[in-house]
Length: 160
Image (tube, rainbow, N blue to C red):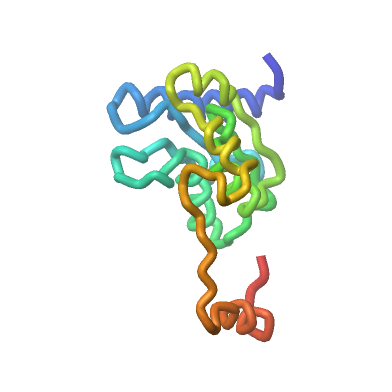
């Protein structure tokens, strides 16, 4: 077993949350823990079907809660422990949250073996938009760039 004793303890909690989520019938087999200064500040479990929300993955739920608890949209002083290698959506959320490290237990291949397969998303991202299964069509009405121009000119913006 790798990691420090403290890291294993946090990972065990993420795995425990994931298993409990399944055994209680609340959702998929995924759990996440966010740690700051050696203590858990937030947890999350997969609640996609419970909340009818395709973004309610464990990592996203934990990030939302940690940001609320810490009063920040960035988690640069935090570590994220997750029971499984994050999916593409969660990877995006994690990068935006900017934790200092991410630790995971299960792999995306192990998740795929139980029908949680995100490979098609990775594959789709590599394709030109015109070749993707989901049509993605650019439409540019007059003034479409106004929000970007307003942001660039704003003196009140909070960059992230």
